Amino acid sequence: MPTLRIALAQVNSTVGDIAGNAAAVRSWSRAAADAGAQLVAFPEMMLTGYPIEDLVFRDSFVSASLSALSDLAASLAADGLGDLAVVVGYVDADGPAATSSGATPGCGRRDASALLFGGKIAAKYFKHHLPNYGVFDEDRYFEPGESLTVVRFGGVDVALTVCEDIWQAGGPFTAARRAGAGLVLNINASPYELNKDDVRLPLVMRRAAEAGATVAYVNAVGAQDELVFDGDSMIVTAGGELLARAGQFTSSLLIHDLPLPAADATPNRAEKTDAEPLPIVEQWIDDDMSVERVVLDASPRPSHRDRVDGGIAARIVDEAEVWSALVLGLKDYVNKNGFRSVIFGLSGGIDSAVVAAIAVDALGPDRVFAVSMPSSYSSPGSRDDAAELAKRTGIDYRVEPIQPMVDAFLANLALSGLAVENLQARVRGVILMALSNQEGHLVLTTGNKSELAVGYSTLYGDSVGGFNPLKDVPKTMVYRLARWRNTQGSAAPIPESSITKPPSAELRPDQKDSDSLPDYAVLDPIIKGYVDDDMGRDELIAAGNDPALVDRLLRMVDLAEYKRRQSAPGPKISGKAFGRDRRLPITNRFREGL
Image (cartoon, rainbow, N blue to C red; front, side, top):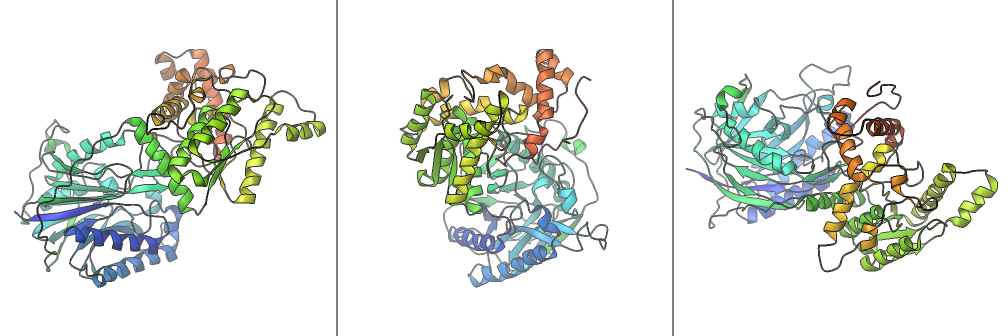
């Protein structure tokens, strides 16, 4: 039985940085070869970054991808790595984009995988299943591939697949079974959401059983705008045994020696696993997807070392998952967009305290700037909490009282009530943006998902900013994160009183969030039901919620759509985040229950 030492390169790429991404492939390929690997696989669209969105429509971008792929193959050979099989994702094209008047049905842009060997592009595969839900718009951008590529390498038949191919039954994995593949390689840019790692393993087990073959699943790590990629690469046998698994939110090579069946093109037998209790062959859809075979005549590089076991990384708790995603999301957004530092309002409340701690973990204290902007309604306790957090974390901290500026407006405008509350928030926004312009910081906004959902924010005030680390984090989770983070390490960054005091915007005397909103423990499940799970009024009431409260909150969510449309991007951690995930018309007269 042949043995392949494979390396799954769980690494970070940057959209549009084709030269930098190619350099990363060369660097990680060298590391894999030095570890004795014979095949190394990189994530989906590694060369271009993912998702590339409307860049796919530019001929110049597609040409750059194709040119870089050929150059990369030659460069790897020049690096002495011509006998290392390197699988890398990129964008290909066999026709004009679908938006072109010259578009041809069945041809166009392709989400592709290539196997590089011997200084050449030895094989290509085009992604078959194209997701068109949630954050994905791949039917808009790509044409599906209709054939499975199987490469005979080192005496083993290796099938190439891409991301969504593993999330749907039938198609490539059924074809891999018919082709007798010994290994199915699946390259991914699969975005993170809480507990998605619990879904992936049973999924990979089902597809491995469907193909009757071992599956090597490699996922990207890093962040691109709202999306965070958590890695969690793994290798699973046809019988459902987990052989190796990488950690989450860390760049790494998962290297493992795989004994695999010798290539003979005999159809595999579908297996049963605990993840698929029913008769498998009867469930899986067969199809007429063709198989294209490529034979690499040259032998893989020798691997003369003791057996390598990739190991199985331990899973992390929910709070650690979310915190890691938020830290990585902020870090990559700041660094990939060339910002040197961040600035935000530090009120002493729970939201800005958590944002401060995230920013320090992501960037280090020297790149984090906080501004206390007290008004006449800011409590001494909040001011003290802000100063204490700054002291604990070592961030740059300054105090800019807003009352003189508010008074100047009020001397020229006759305002009262809510208008005065909003004025205070907008003065703070002006200060932050002015400091951003003057000093070059990226402004962070600190509103959480609960507040964004019901519109509990001021346009051009507390919502001002270029990035929002808490955009997809419900208020109840904000508290969980604060408590968890304070248990990590020797020093707790967040003052206990920031966690325990009742939340308040402090824009009028003795104001509390509870004056306008129900307890967050009641509010957040309703928001999750309505926003994340698309539940209607009747379903929410049937779940035990007060009808009058449901009616009030649903109206608040609906009416706040125009605010959310103008909000800053932030890391996605839930099944449905505001932004790419949820797209509703602003002008909309449909109301639940009416």
